[in-house]
View 1 (cartoon, one colour):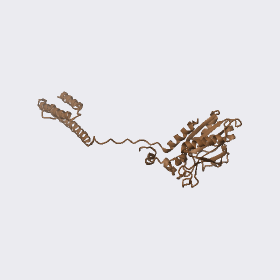
View 2 (view 1 turned 180 degrees about the vertical axis):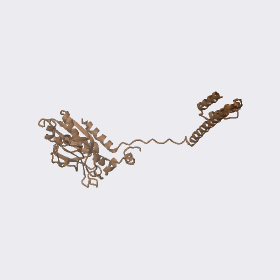
View 3 (view 1 turned 45 degrees about the vertical axis):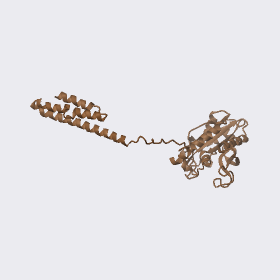
Length: 340
């Protein structure tokens, strides 16, 4: 009798119940009036008196096990049927959200593509820099205000100063140290300044800086390069003007304005009614910078320029709050992907 009980127990556990038909066959086989379990109860009278109590308990447990398996399978099938009834196959499927490229990524890619077409390669470097690459090699004297902790995020002070880079000019120093002229490269990347966050300033932002070094490079070459960039980025009608300025690593230096694309130089609140918008700084590479990177300043000359990606994006998309670029608001980002 014990062997029969074990055999039926294994059969109950292994019985496949994947449909209502399977469930009904299970009921008939193990719980019906003519089930195998019922037959075992009929055979109980043939068991010796001293074993009848124990066998009876095992038969009751077997019947309960079959009932539990039946109830669980029935509930699962009913739940599956209920889900199928709720599913309306005639309804359109859920739309799949399309990812949106960040506006700064769009502008950065466009800037890179413009300069790639005229022979500029892309170079990158670390965001954590030492004093030499971030300041000294770029002709920053020890007393220069940019070295003050109010402007720079220093990680380590003292003899071996380490800081978050304040510009991607540090990448240009690395390129000059490891390359021989002619050099024609741009350095896109994120930079950090210790500034209060507002609609017009942030503690981190993005730059694209350019460098061209060769024999007989002139300021006219710089102006023509920037004019080409302005027309490619802002349209054929774009004009530029250069204003004298000062940067430690260039001499002479200039600030570059582009004609306002919003009012077409007529004057508006964006350009403060001047008709011009500042977009970048530039100049001829200071001979001290060339010499510090073991490039003979008597044989070679060059120009450099740098622009803020956020600034270009502001002019292109008319977004006047820099904080929007780093908040990752999907509603904001969706505006820059057509069809969403």
